[in-house]
Structure formats: structure tokens, C-alpha cells
Image (cartoon, rainbow, N blue to C red):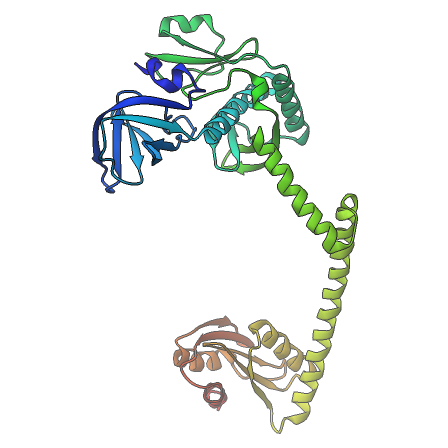
Amino acid sequence: MLKNRFYYEDAYQKSFRACIVHSGEDENRRPYVVLDNTAFYPTGGGQPHDTGTLEGITVIDVEEVDGEIRHFLDEHYLGSPEVTGEIDWPRRFDHMQQHAGQHILTAAFVELFGFQTVSFHLGKELVSIDLDVESISVDQLAAAEKLANSIILENRPIETKWVTEDELVHYPLRKQVAVTDEIRLVIIPDFDYNGCGGTHPRSTGEVGMLKILSTEKQKRKVRVHFVCGERVLHELHRKHEELSTASKLLSAPETGVSMAIEKLLSSQQLLEKSLEDAKEALLTFEAKDLLACQHDAIVKGTFENRSIQELQKLARLLVGLDSEVVVLLVAVNEDKLQFVAARGSSCEANMKQVSAAALPLMNGKGGGNESFVQGGGERAISSEEILRVMEQSLS
């Protein structure tokens, strides 16, 4: 029976003795043993499995398969059939804190706003619940967090009870239970009644505290990320380290980091604008220099490590300065060739001819219209050769 498993009889049991019923390997050749009873909680209900040791051999995973609990080991066990198991207690207690915290926060959202939780995940660093709502406000999150922490602070008992399906009518369950026999309820009196197979502490006070960290949209639901207990301290320490580092880098007090960042971002925007203006001025100068050096109606050039955007800007500047020219520009960027071809408003040359001639030679793709085209492809021939082909296509 489920209720006789050690982890249900006493969630605080850290070691136990049991006998091996049988052993084997799964389809991935992972060795496992099945015991006649166990204190190792298997993965289920959103809560991860316990870890620990059996006779000193590391238990790396615990799963319930076809009604039996398999303890996966990092090596084969060849000893006596009677074994001693040791639970990784810090991991177990952390899971107990997070799972109980989830019950409390979920019940808080229901009590305050009628928001139902549709799924729960207990991760290595964060815990999350998915609320059956499309949006949630900052004030609602704050209210739910406040109520959850008040329940934790009151140190209410957390009770577990095995009931039959007929007995369920006597309890104001938060949601319908998914099983019909061996039903286990986890109860926080006058606050939360819920069917659950996870491990929990004896009282809400052992959850320590709860902090909501963030939310995100998940399809038509809202996912709420939070932490409880020792994880709150870990998160506070991590954020303090980040804030302290930022404070030193910005030469600002911790209370003034956000203001210093705003000033830095404003300064960066001004620098970016100045840099962009300088680039535009240089391109204009370059365009005038190219026009001054031309000997016919075609302005051409080859470049290295010039983006297609820069080529486009340069071409537009050139045809804007001289409406009678045709512009042919080619750039080599690592293993790629890219080109731009443009004509002035007084010129009748068809730039699509240029593109049609160039693209097959570089196995490339391009686009544009009769007055302006661009494209790129493999560096199959030199930039000078492709420029010559582009020029010949206008003849």
C-alpha cells in the first residue's frame, strides 16, 4: 500500500534498512534495484526524485515503473540483499519546502482572486506554477505573496490524511483529485485542502518564506516563478553580489545603481547618435571622392568587410549626388560576396540585368527593382571578376 512507504510514514526519515526484491537494467542499460520498502521519493506530481546512497552507492534517479519503485545506481550493486539507504536530506527538505510553498501560493491565488493553478514544476533553482488566466497585475502578485507569507508566519500545521473516495465530500478540496483509491490529502487547516502525493514539512513555518521572482506568458496562461526557504537566501545572496558588482563598476552607491545605469544608457545613446552621424559624414565624403575619381558614367568599387547596409547607403548617396551615374559596388565578407547596383534618376540602365548576370556566378540570391538591386552568395570568384561581369552586363 502507498501509505506504508517510508517516505509517507515519515517524510523526515533520513536512513532506513530494506531488502532488495530484484535488480536489473533499463533500456538505456542503467542499473537499478527494487526494494521491499523505501524512503526514496520517486519523481511524480511535479516534485523531483530523491537522491542519496544504497550501501554507499550513489542513487542517481528514482522512478516508479509499472507499480515498482526503481532506484537507479551509478554502478551495479553485487552485495547482500539487505541494504541501508541514506537520503540526501538537504535536497529532500528543499523539495518539501518548495512543494509546501507551492500549495500555499496556489491557495492564496484562489482565495484572493479565484485564479486556479493548472500545472506545477519544481526545478533545481526555481519553482513555477501556471495560472489559468491570461494576465495578472503587479498588485495581485504582491497581494498573493503577502497572504502566502502570512500563512507561513502563522506556522499552521500541515496535515496528511488518507481517505476514500466517499469521504472526499467532507473536505473543501481546491480541485478534483485524479485518483479513486488510496487518496492522500495534504491539509493546511482553514486554508487549503488538496489531493497530493508529495512530501511536505510538518508546519507552514518550516517553509521559511516565499518570494515571487517573475512572470511570463505561457500560451493563454501566466507562469509565476518563485522560491521558498533556503532558496530565498540563495537568490538574495546572488542578487546582492550582482548589485555589489554593478555598484563598483558604476562607481555608485547600491541605492543609486538604477540612476547611474539610466545616465549611462543616455550617454550611450548620445555616443551612438554621434557615431552614426560621423559614419554618415564619412560615407558622404567617400561618395564625393568616388565621383571625383570617375572617368565615365559608371562608379564602381570593391571593398572588404563592408556590410550590405553600408553598400546600400553609399550607393544611394552616389545616385543622389549624380543622377546620371550607374553605381556598382562589391564587398567580400569572409566567405561571402555581396553586391549593390543602382542607377541615377536620369539613367535608363536596368539594374535587374546586373543582378541576373552576377547571381548565378556566386550561387546567390538577391532582390530589388530596375533602379536598385542587391544580392549575395558564395565567394566562388574574386570581387574584381564579379565587378567586371556586372559592368559587362550593361553593354
